[in-house]
Length: 136
Length: 134
Image (cartoon, rainbow over all chains, first blue to last red; front, side, top):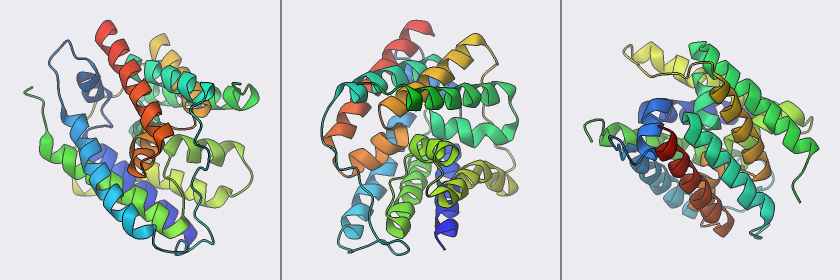
């Protein structure tokens, strides 16, 4: 059952990413680029996602455990530390260069685009390097 | 603002929120895409559900294209900028413990201060870079 839940969650996220337009890096850039023909759509993607998640999470929180697992896994750390800030900064720079964050890039793999595949390949290399060289 | 698509943005966003919610309700997990997919690749523990999630991510647009035939979106050219961007996104999301989904939706959605700060930082960085370079 846990495999099915995870699969459905992945499918819904990717369909949402596609329907909302986030899968299109040109559209993402037209939100991030304030100088051109600005497109505020992406702000509404966050509004839509957060309205559903915030209201649903408030209800789920009352459960003692998830339906198909023993515990909730929610990050305990509250520290605003260097890795968080530097990591977010580096991620934002990469996002602003092309308009891809991890979800849309992975969802677009099925297009077979060589540019998308290249992006995902170097992203995986980045994950690998960061695991070997943790920021302190 | 002629490219503004408020309804599909809100509806697609709601689906993203629903997908993330199902993972929390069913498995008690944060739907952070960078975290789940990188762990699926590099962590032997708890691998099956993460691989199922990754499979869902890839299958989503294929499933949608069975029902909606006029899906149209751009993909980047294979350039050194594309490869550099991928590397930076990989490094940054691993060091910063999350991306748009993990920090931007799930983190902000549970009012995590860490995620709110991270989202402000990557949003601002993305806006500065995109505005300067495009």
